[in-house]
Length: 315
Length: 287
Image 1 (cartoon, rainbow over the protein chains, first blue to last red):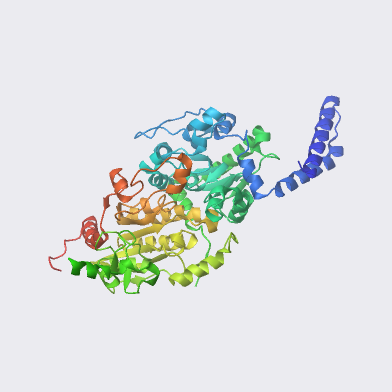
Image 2 (cartoon, helix red, strand yellow):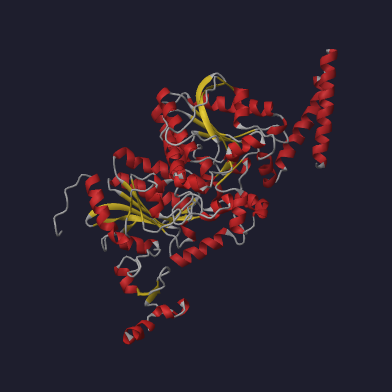
């Protein structure tokens, strides 16, 4: 642990003590505590700004980082998980169903990682098979039919690279999910809550608004994948993470996301309730803004958003 | 017999590839030397073994379109280096090399032309340019071609040849998958056919976006087509991959493509298919 982080923890502890004292004794210490609070805020900001890209990738994968269902438990009511693609099977790595988000009826689509070894394996570490994307298409059909805004929580290292996945058209399934999302006539708000790996992430990432949590990453390939292509060595992933510019601040700067959703200092896993509160607020705010738009406008706005993405020069 | 063998010896397959005169090309599969002139006449399909040699974008459109009908639209959009990406060499240096090699700004060639008299808009990816990888320029040119087809009301024919999205443009490359899909919507809305031809190889983000949302998907014989590359799959499952895995014929068997069509038949196949889909009268016999 670095020195500034130690300082910060000490200050935070002292602040908590003093706040406790204030509460117990009924004294108003706000004026006295203001400089201490300001210093804590400043150090928090510094701490986040100082993280390397690879450190952020590590936070995105930190043990105990809230999974999609951890957020659903904190933010949603009436979640009814709907299973299956009606053709082959059910994918436990991409789940969804109707729910209320802060009271508002929505259709949820979520990349889901396991919370213990057994469920991690069952959910293939968040890597979906084609059935997951086909289930997403089916649930988007329902969302359009019932006028439910779509909220997606993205958390996948990428689509599953397996023989059966290829036999059943992994590429086709992702493409169809992207296309279905382009066609949605309801609002769609997407948030990368951990890993945003490649096409498997974009499959549920075509929203009117795309947000990213502060320590999530989103790119065309994982740092390990890029490293093994460039240097034939997955151990060079830290260098690849730097080159790919895959962090939340990078994505904001590149104009690929509308907003970075703040996390508690040190990462969402240290305070899942606080992380959930920030996530809940951000999604609700964007849903409220989008609720003013009609079905045609929503599709047109989303299409225009993605049509404009790219960096080139024209002669 | 002896005389036959005498002549056979003199066939160029006996020579090392590097010393092969410009007149000949060695088939990568059967190793037979083929006259380049004969190769051109057979759409770069080995006359001996039927192997479909890889084409660059220019060769592709020459095979597909009526002679002299092509009017290029791509070429004004040039790649930049939005991430200041550097690995073993800076991205701009890689681009400059690929541009010099292919004479193109990036890995795609688009325009309009006719196939046996039928007007079409076409896009051909160029595997010779950085493995046909898709960055912002490829995405933009394909989007513009799709929009041109929608505006002109001509069927859109796209030939895919790509290792997938381009790493050096990071998430911007990824977004091209959505951008191209958005642009193709105009065709679906107006009822204008979109046919994609998957050639060797078509993988990654291209397979997972515009190449597979076509109305009709055609594959060239023996092409490698898939999402994850075979090496990645092998590393994940640590098993040998089945014979013919991710080849066109495998995909046809699994219901993922409409047909596997020999390249020498593409023009006739497309003319007949697109003629029906656009409800045009059949061409006069002999026309």
